[in-house]
Image (cartoon, rainbow, N blue to C red; front, side, top):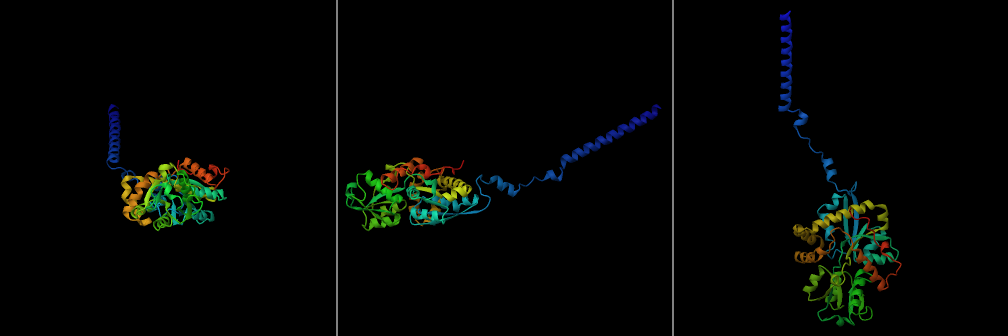
Length: 355
């Protein structure tokens, strides 16, 4: 009996040792050679990665956005061209198309007719348009200081010498008209009485009128100011030194666009902020100059010098200077273009700034 029990116990111990060995072998095998599902790291799904990297304001599908601008002869539109060239707008599913026009008033007509979804131009033009019943509002800015400089013909030594002379603006009730009138009044001269105001077109055309002696004074924006200096014209004043925070280039949307496609405007403004960050980064200056030369047609020297003046006036967040809009309203009221019934809330909409 004792011998039988020894046999049973021996058999059980042998079985236990065998099972233990199998378990260790299984465990060791699992450690040394992982299962196929664990051996190869899971490759990231390209679609999931793209979605994770996509900006919050990205539109669900590619959307065309037509922009009208009177700034193709100046450099305040550079941020838009850079955003387009560097694929920033495309990242937000925006297919941005830019069309130049002769003056902000013309651009705003295109906005009202539906030819443009957005415009870039002087805020005074928007104020004048809204006063006449246009359905539009300013939603941002690409330049929040005036870029205009006052240039005079070589024979003008002081402001008083302009009495009896002519001044060139783009067109009546345009931003150049309002700022020219403000500057003359601020320096003791009465527009239309002491100085005749004539329409001459954009900065290059106004410079031509100054060079040929048709006018004695005008407002010129960079980079045409470089050409003016080379032609022997005299810089008499810089508007932003006399009048701080007067927005030069505001972004305007139609009321229809604001009501029906707010998500498109939010995507555009977010892309603008990103483009501005790229433009204002010193390490990108050479590339920005290259894009400016390509799109605006000025020489590298003129483009680089112009950007030195423009870059500090570009708001980091694409926000307009609200006090500047208030002052533009005041200028328009002072010269009789609008009355007190037009308040700032009828002209601006701050709801599209990126969070």
